[in-house]
Length: 98
Image 1: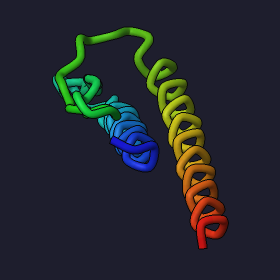
Image 2: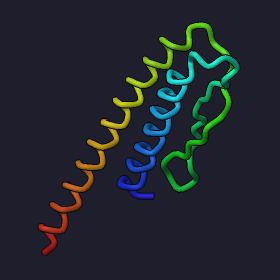
Image 3: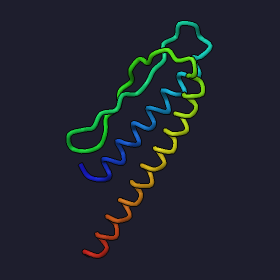
Image 4: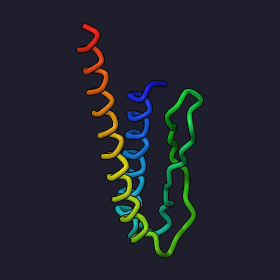
């Protein structure tokens, strides 16, 4: 897998983690509502795959979920910057080769 695909897969997993954190915070006042987490595994050709899983109950969950949401947003931004840099490098290479 090329760097564009790796960055895009990282962005997808970061977005999924942000969604899981937001879901946990939104469902906090609902009694008996299960918490969700994201399980990420490396892909054979590069990149990462993310799946939602059920998380164990956690007393410090609201703070952890908010921190995880911020970390997910930062991971998304880092992958987006990598995607942009890779795209610019490819564009420069094409300009040189033309």
